[in-house]
Length: 59
Image (cartoon, rainbow, N blue to C red):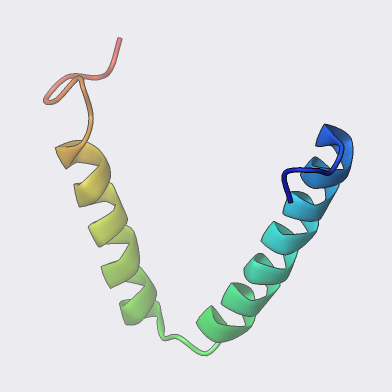
């Protein structure tokens, strides 16, 4: 996709992201609240582990 105009590339990337988001939303729609909680806790833990400001309020 290197030969395409930057705007066209951006539009295509947005479309691809929207399609991926739609597929993810359909998949996660069948998850239980407990499964979603596990995902969110994992995301929060990963964010904390990779934060350059660990153990503070970030300010």
